[in-house]
Length: 561
Image (cartoon, rainbow, N blue to C red):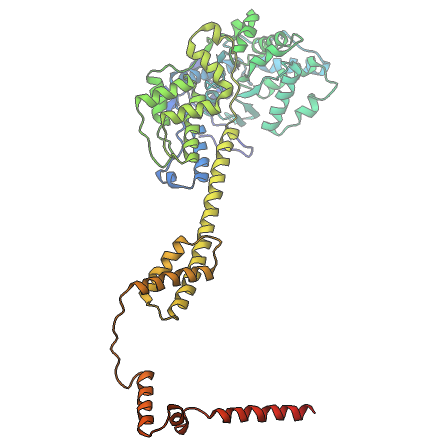
């Protein structure tokens, strides 16, 4: 096992016994991981993201984040296993004649150093490396999975290996097993050199860009330094991605760069893997030596995945990752639809599958459908539709019109749907707040109306029923006064329609019965009702009340005077 070192991605060298005789006693090879079997490779480079069924019940905003996990999904195919074998051979074969303990390698590094001091660029070294192996070329449509596959395979190899001692001999050496650069957009060699120095600084924490890539440095000197550092740090494999940019140079940069790659391979034995779209074919074939060198292990031309068992394997694994509320089982119609909309381009297939879920979540449909996939492809893959249409036609002349595919900005597409989800969520929240306010208002009004109507001696059951009835039909702008009036009208109307019920009144219990008794007593005493009430002290004399008011007025008048 190799132990992690202080720098990110750096491990301490652990030397393993070699089965292949050519690799014995070479610390740069012995420090590499073992040669993997195909079954090991398949297991190690597969990526099946984590997934929990409960995530399908989350809020839509959270599920949009979960859907992004599909970008991690990687299902290896036969061509990926082939790619790993090629890279495994290229790195090891390139190291065979670059043993840091070998006399030829030491003399080559010294010669390179002297040329760098003199500002020269060496095309042919006195101590030429023996031809062991070279790199290869990977050509294919954008989105077909070239770069992703490379990254997965390269992840099997620690990029930085720190050597300190080899068989009890001091050996202070930092090995870079592989290095990946993007070809400059202008196809210039100077741009490539600057990218090289910058990447070395990122990996090693060095300062090569400021020392060797500044203004005033000649191209020959920069190239010599690049060659020297490749040997000095034991770069095992150099990957140049996006080589189709070479054709954009207007000053012969393509030929210069291809010649440099040939020299890099021929003089110091660093294998070069070039990766590009179909647009790069004419550039690579224009230089016979590079075409031959690039085909050292045979070119890899990647086209779309055919609709066979490979496609079914890919879709079967992908289909498990659903974050809509309703799970949709995979059937032939859905598989055919996804292939039709992506034409077997894996990157596009994943994005169509993602976007169909995002759209279903945002519009509330909450399930994957054929219609949803077609709609998602139509709405979000506008830039690649001409290319997909040409591929569907199967006409070579039509396909040739499109050398590359404009990448799809998934963040931009998801933001469109996220805006819709956010808007719906805001509306839902506002409605909830409004409903809560309305319920609170209605509860307060209901209590107020009930109490007031009960105080008017209406039956409690009738009041409860009528209040609820009025509140259901009450408009937003109608007041409490209007609500009570409506309720009273209903209650009074109902009372008039009911037949009056005779009420049994117990004698001696009501005000009416007391008055009747007093009236009977007045008649017996042969007095008027008023006189009897006055005699009993129930009412006052009318004059007595008048005199009291007159005396009060006189008192007020005297106090004023």
